[in-house]
Image (tube, rainbow, N blue to C red; front, side, top):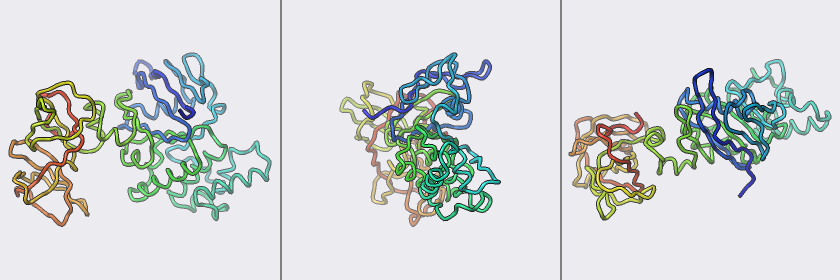
Length: 358
């Protein structure tokens, strides 16, 4: 096993009588990029601040490279944790050039060594020709990269990033998230960031922790989170989809209003009988030759694709992502077939046959 850089065991944190983090555990190995994913108020930024040492820990332990830095009654100072931090607003010094910003945390180095190190970092983030510019003279995406260079310059053991793309427009956010992953991987950095945007999490992270109400619901790879969610709450938060009723037969196949499903269960399924089945948009294929027909209830034009909400003959609702050259209006009936390869089922709950992401 690779060296563990960050290990959190049963971490709990509260503000007054309000618990905001509850029994959270995770490990992050050297060179891995982790992400805490969840809605606002779920506790993810509190976790980041506790790792950084900005807040004392009430319960549990936090260890960096095998050494405990936080537990009840013990808080190693942030400056002694070998942690780099990229804040949501970047926190660049407006009166310093980009060179001066990146050099700020390198005061212990000799001038020549410091200059070499700053040049290396600005080259790493693609700003090697902008040493003398000031933060207001560059774009938001470039400011984000300068903040990243400044945080990496002291060679931290762990890099923490708080909603690093939230101040950028959508197009730039998507492009920069891929660039940031490339930069971190090229540097060999171990990093943990928080976001409410699952597309950013998928684009950047090796491991993602879905958080809700202060608890870690699942810590896993993106593919596993999507195709094998640990519970309904993860299924509801990650991706899009709807639950429809089904019955698991003795053969292991599932009878539904979408037809007989014969995919691979995401985990050992001991139960038989009534279940709710998660149907993702990619599980439903538009096929005019199919005998299965569905009524278009809603359509959401997305450019290259149209996102349809469809009503099956059984009355169940499913979703489908169809190329936009196939344009159908609400009330029309279209042919569909199932292409369910991962069977995600939970014990039946009444009145649950609605959007998984609602």
